[in-house]
Each structure stands twice: as structure tokens, then as C-alpha cells.
Image (cartoon, rainbow, N blue to C red; front, side, top):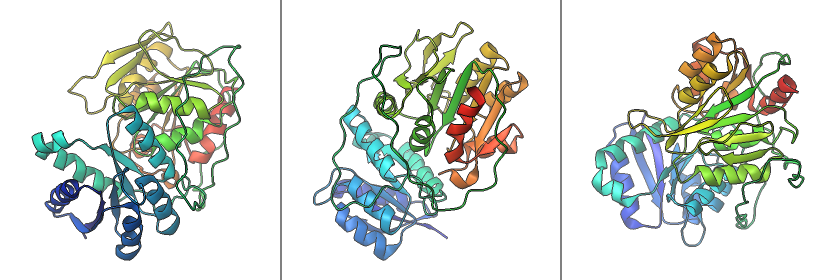
Length: 376
């Protein structure tokens, strides 16, 4: 059965072009279009699409507000279109917090110059997120809203050290609406020298949930690998730094790993770690599908830290992280995977589990506290 899609955008050109691209795939059916957020809500209720593509800036009601209402009234996987700017990244992260599953850059030039590449990417995204857990997972659903919520200004990147101001306790996050699947026993404590977390689709919200559970005095350095464009990772690091009690920053070449500091791999590049605890940022290799790539960072951690790494693979499409986890496992390090029930997309963690690399499988709600139990 074809995946039913609702296309929402105030640009007539973009609505038509997206509809044409999707309709050319026999596995996808465009069942309707909408020109603003209010129409999107009405059409979502009437047509019950499997996936909604959503623009942000529209008249009458913006895309983020529409996503919030849709998630409250008829939870549906939403793919956001975003501009490749710092502001576009900030808005997209707000949309993911509101309940959107994934995003794609809204680049009119690419649609004109690379139609086949755009078509392949867009259709793959639609088909993948149509199988997501968005209809049954409520872990990112916000409280009911009556009007658009103001978008918070981005925070500055926090510094590490005793002179840093005290960080607020993280805001409570709504519990999932479904029962969690059975998970592994609580972990045993070990003197880990590094915590490495890799993720993709659904990762921004998942990382927020995990990292906000860590205390300011967390004793191990952390590296984060999230599949994201270059324009997005700085804004994402700023957001995490504002929300978490640990410090979070976008990694730069020459950064040194330190306890209580999480370094986010920059989009469009690769991040490696050496035995001295120094970070090396390399240009993104066009031969690699992912920039940043979880396998590359995990592999360098295996070489540098042996059995002293706790690696965690969270929600995401594909199998990035599996081969890096294999190297870590061979060196004696520990590998955890997020369970299927709490994943937006059970791809990357499933690859870990199927390869029999997972030492433990935990629900997203439990991963943060188990990291603390294992390291403190």
C-alpha cells in the first residue's frame, strides 16, 4: 500500500515540485496539500496521512505551532523543510522538540540542478519516517498550547571549569504514553575514560533526554556524533549547553577531552580522538555517506582507549556505528543500544543488536541514569 503524504507549504512552486517528486514514486501517494498551518491541521484530521511535509514560515499559523497541534490531535510523522542558516537550524530544532521526526534542507537550487538526487533523498526520507514510531511514541509531545510559543534565543557556548555559573536543573520531560519493553539489568560501575554516543533520526530529542540526566560533576568526557548538516551542529550544541548541567560545545580541532564536557562532532566533517585525549577534526570525505560518521569516531576511540569506552547507539536510520562498535567490542569496551519501543527509527540500534554487539539494551528514559550509575 502506498504511503499517503500531505504536503504543506505556502509557496505554490514548492508545493507543486514536492508533490511531483513524490508522486513519481509508485510507493508514495500525495493525498492533499495545504498552504498554512491551520489548513495543515484540518487536512491532517480529514485525510489521515501517513507522513506530512511541513514548511516553517507560513501565514496564519507557522509550521512549529501546526506540528504541536497535530501531535496532540492526530500524531503523524512530520518531515520539516529548513533553511541552511543558524536561524533555520534553531527553528528546525524547535520543530523537532515540538514532535517533528526529521528534516531536510529547503534548497531551491538543488531542486533545479540535482533533481534525481533530490528525488531519491526525499522519497527515501518519506518512506523511512512513515515506518517511525511517531504515532505510538509520545515522549517528545509537548503540553497543550493555545497560541504560538515564543522561540527562545540561543545560548552562548558554556565554558568548562569551577568558575562557570551554576546550571539549572533540566526541565521535566513528559513520560512516554506506552509501556516500555523489558530491558537489560542495571549496569555495573567501571572506570570509563570516555562516553561516546552516536545517533541520527530522532537523535536531537533523544540526546536532550539523555544528557539532561547527567550531573554537572559527571566524571567522564563525552563525545556526541549526530548526523546533521554543517549549519546545524553549532546551534544544536548551544541548545544542549543551555539545557544541560554538563557543558556542551561543537567540537573544534585541538579540543581536549575533559570530564563534564560533551563535544558534538561538527556537521559536514569527521571527528577522531587520539590517545592524549585530543580531538582531531577532518574534512568530510565525499566517499562516506555520513558526515559526521559514528563509525569513524567510535573506531578512533577503540584505538585510543581500548576497553575504557562506554558507547551508546541511539535512534536513527541505517547502520552507522555498527562497525565502530565492533572494534570497540573487540577491545573490551561496553556497547549499549536503545530499545525498539522508544526509538523514533529502530535502524542503528537494531544493527547493533542483530550483530550481537550490545552488552545492554535500554529504554531511552533509562539510558541517562544508567550512564550515571555506570560512571559514578
